[in-house]
Amino acid sequence: MLTGYPLLLVIALSIVLIILLTSKWKLHPFLALIVACFFVGFATGMPLGTLVTAIEDGFGGLMRYIGIIVIFGSVIGVFLEKSGGAMRIAHKIIALTGEGKIIPAISLIGAVVSVPVFCDSGFILLSGLADKLSQLGKANKASLSLALATGLYTTHTLIPPTPGPIAAAGNIGASGYLGTIIITGLCFAIPILIITWFFSKRLGKNITAEEVIPDEPAEPENQVLPSFTKAIFPVVLPIILIAIGTILNFAGIENEILDFISNPLVAIFLGAITAMLLLKPKTGSQSSKWFVEAIKVSGPILIITGAGGAFGGVLKATPLKDFIAQWMSGGNSGDLLILASIFLIAAVLKTAQGSSTSAMVITSSLLASIIPTLGWDQPLQFALAVMAIGGGAMTVSHFNDSYFWVVSQFSGMSAKDTNRSFSLMTGIQGLTVLVLCVLSWVIFV
Image 1 (spheres, one colour):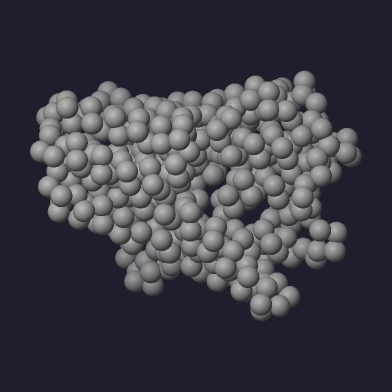
Image 2: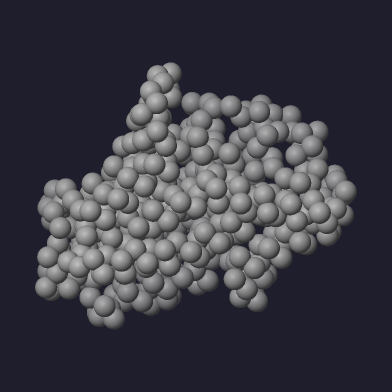
């Protein structure tokens, strides 16, 4: 089987192939990843039986970990959105922060809502809130839209149970450190949000956003919103349970029941059940429709993620890790180089093909075969790797990203204005994550 630098060339060409298939020829990422699997297998001379097994094991192995988690995460998101729970959270945060701090408030709203709800849906859902606040003269509409968009974007790429970070953790073998990843993502999110507040106000003040009337109002006038407690509980319950498991691990405490309920699968399942009980619609048939919609939402994410696992499985079946082990000297500077490389690969993929989730899946699939050679044994090392992947997957959102167009159309900003403001801010967000990764590694690892 092919090894050495020719193997690295084949892998590099496979990445180029994925980019061309998805961005130039508009092939679905699932098909692009499967095509890349066969390309790597054939080009490296992998035995055909080994290639098929690698694809099956890679796909099935990742689905075994992430499948149920993504589905129940989507259930939380859909029930939160349809019930008006997300809007209730928005109103509460604004009430707590006060109208004088409306830009930080709406950014924080986006960050909270995007943990269970995809940022595209979150922006559509909450864009009406930005409209109302701007009409009341509380802040410039463009500034509010930028703060909301970047707030949503921050947690979308950094904090589980959003599928991208979950898939990245599963691919690199960090599923047991999910609590550490959540805590690290929360710590990273704080300075990133502060930076976006500043740039939202500065860049937005010179942009005129047109009035937009969404096809579906973000908040129907006759909708009775659930209480804040009911709305927020399904979101915070899984995070609290997973955090408890992390604390118990650090403390060396073993408790069968707590270990069980703090398992990410069980924790997010309990969050989904809570959402279905507390945020249920008026009729059982409508509840069933919401659940079906959640399944539909999770489907595309699952197949892309599974294909990424298959790609990672094929790479693991090559001699890549043995070759890497020969020249990887380790040490702090080597690890920092790895972090920067992880970020760069994710950034290239994101910029080229548009999808943050796909960029995270593909990058973590590549990393999966290298991780065993690095000698990493600390949860924080794996958490920082996930942060580097997420930071790269932020960099940058532009014309080939569906979220870019959602932000542009629902904010009333022109594509040109969105590009010179929102796209610029996503680049700043990503670079901030890289700086935080390097500093955290130097200080804490």
